Image 1: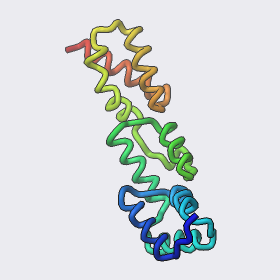
Image 2 (image 1 turned 180 degrees about the horizontal axis):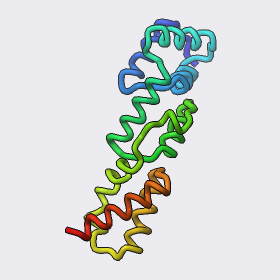
Image 3 (image 1 turned 60 degrees about the vertical axis):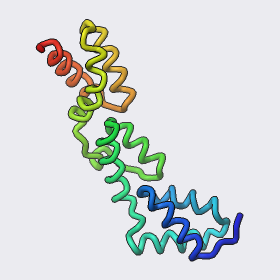
Image 4 (image 1 turned 90 degrees about the vertical axis):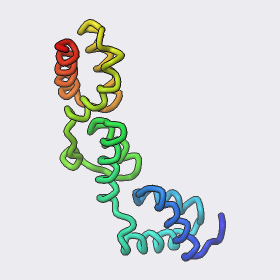
Length: 153
């Protein structure tokens, strides 16, 4: 372990934060790889929190929005990812429209599966959406709707 001072650690963390927002646990893990001095780690984290560079609630909101935009996933998978980053949330805190996100996620696969019979389409789409963490009620709704949409055209 290096014997880095407060200013050096703060500089490293600010650079680490420049790539994307981070959770408090991610910052603690990063700092623990840089120094073994826990009081110094606590001081850096306190400083980051005081200048609003470290906020788990804002991070959780950012992560949910980012994942919903880039690669839609269900509330269950979002909760699991947040937990892995040290943030515990309940279902009410993750406000996502699972039906809409599931439909977005399924759009990429519709062209591949448009000629399948309903049973096969339901199995493939159901597995795909379940893997992405969507609830069964959202999966059922989206699968029926999307299958009807592609077969009406």
